[in-house]
Image (cartoon, rainbow, N blue to C red; front, side, top):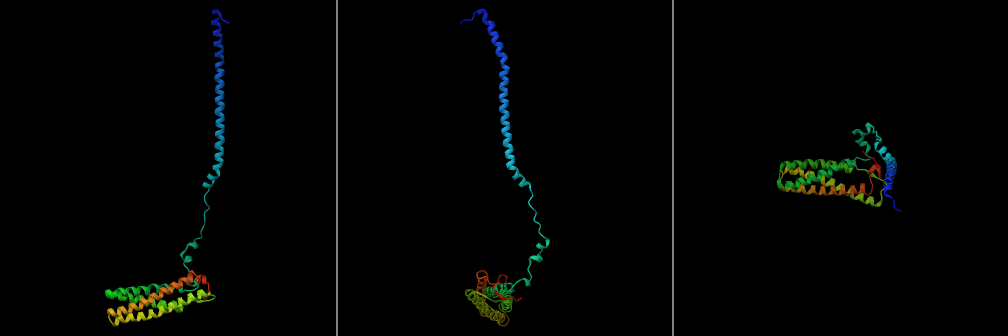
Length: 236
């Protein structure tokens, strides 16, 4: 079918007008589609943000909630409450026994060095250390020695060794102190007299170290002494 030439222009005009009339509708329809798509995306995003905020809200609230303040009474922090008095201890033996352990070893070491140097100052240091070491060893072994009760057989053997070396500590410490006094004041620091005093006090230092070893074994392995356990009497 052929369109006659005199009808072609009117038909093209009508077709053009028809298409132009539908263009806004098409454009509007596309806008509606895009708008719906944008709105749907916004709704989904809003829902996701809401879910995220609901999940993080407890954490945020927990983070913003201040930690409970622990109120400590002032009197609990005072040194008078922290520092135990002598009456709080089941026995004062542990408070005294560290003096002979330290001082008798110091006296022996100083005298061994003084065999070489022969210095009067070192003689005085050894004499004072031996004097205080002997006195505190005697107190720890006799006046402040705790009495035990209900020990196991093995703990009793350990205690016997501890007491044996404690006695040797006192005996050798006393003899060594006398030898040192004679060496310093009678023999005027002669090398041989210093060596004799050093030898005796070295024996006392060895004895006190062994007594300390068995004492630590009694406390930390056998459980004798802490909070008064296995102690018969509480001497102060």
